[in-house]
Image 1 (cartoon, rainbow, N blue to C red):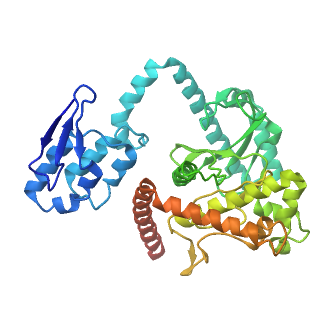
Image 2: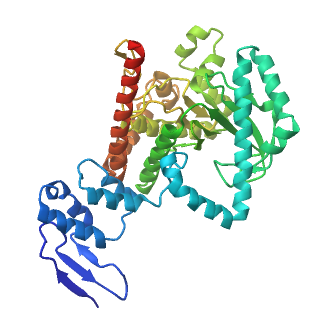
Image 3: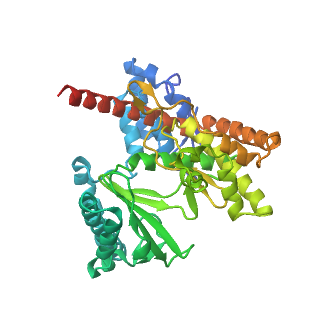
Length: 441
């Protein structure tokens, strides 16, 4: 059936090469590659062993991206190991807007677009729409200093009703989801948000799958890549939980960086921030956050009977999931304005500007006092408003403990986390250096 060949460099590489030429081009190796590469740090100090490893890498089949990422860690400093890892990752996406990369990938993209005329038309339509949105956003930022909010919104609607804008922004495939066709703008429902970069809140009729209308937020001036990374980690965490038979009702919404410091964010329908729910339940804004019944009453307003029980179960599961996620990923800047709840009870977090322990501080005092958010009004909902209902709270603790155990046990998740932690650490050092330089000037 096959042949077995021993390797004289068994201490530093594979001991056995088992070949089945009729079934597989590459031979099977024992021990497997992940066991061999653990010795890479030791191999780096031995010339003979290093040559053996280099020869092995030349014949070894490509690793999956998750496993190849581990080889980029500083524990594997050998040049050939890193080149092998880069070769495994070369087919993945790259940042083509960077000049050093665009030269290599520009020709590949051009060849693809010339060979795919149908997709080229879709992409051209999306690029045209994004350019129009950038222009509109710039006008709104300029008018925001001159006009009040009502007149600014009216000026925005006037622009969107122009033929050039209507044609560019209608009938395009959503960059966030190719199954969704952004058919026509509901101009009266469109607005801009109050934050510094004045993001555009756009509402479309949907000619694809799902709901009748779909919302999209366009941001220009904010780097969404860190949000994309965090949401990708949440999807991976959710996948690991589901593979282990645990569905914690996570909601990693769509987010896509479409260019340098610009991008799109999916609007989750029928949802509100905790802050808005609390504010709408109280006549006095200063005391709104202290109303423990606000969230539970809001869920009761949209759910009753069995639906309310399901909504509280959704809330409990998703609350447990995001408690674990925010703790494991070190997500900071958590407050009632970036935690949202759907009318069905599903809780989810937004705005991931501070992750992996990169927390805000003021005058040397860290603003984060707890590793994750579990407020008294959350517990009040989980206990269904009954103080002595410890059974429901016990379920939350059980889900949280199991979710944390599964998340930390996943090797590929840990590799991604370690790499990003070092990246964020270096980024934080650069930001601190820049801030110090600015202050000294």
